[in-house]
Length: 172
Image 1: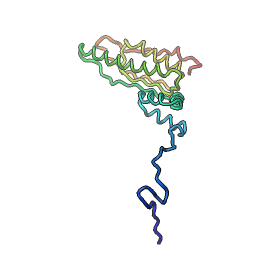
Image 2 (image 1 turned 180 degrees about the horizontal axis):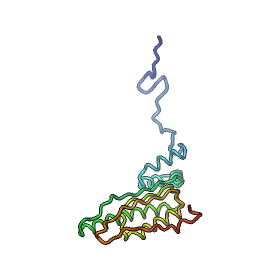
Image 3 (image 1 turned 45 degrees about the horizontal axis):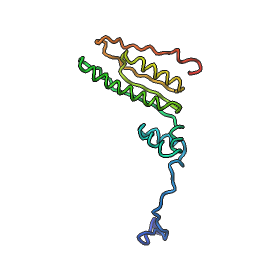
Image 4 (image 1 turned 30 degrees about the horizontal axis):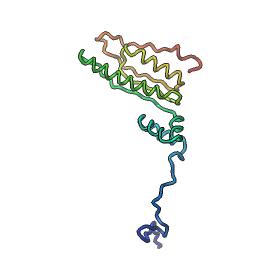
């Protein structure tokens, strides 16, 4: 029966007689396949993607050629009292501003999916139409809008008429 030693330390800084190097690794993230890099980039928050794209021209290229899945969600919570309406409007305005900021930064980038999930109120029709226009002009493959019904007691019928006329034979 023979004994195999996996690693034998011969001195404090040598293994099997070879010196341990403390140098910089020659491995670069850019050397990974494009699909792996896109998967990594897709897991990063948008702020980190922006930071990564500033690091080098190769990262800028990676970030520009990846397909993105844009998903925006705000929990359904319509105000039960009139004084909560102001807070609701502020939260929704922040949500709309965030979506619009990402949409502005995505022009020229490849977007595979665009999902928006929020409580619909008729005062948001123009924003929703803008997002539909963006999705059509960017030739996004999958578009999904999940609209929770708003409280009808406050006078909002909560209907949205999807602008199907934007989806012509070339965009479908």
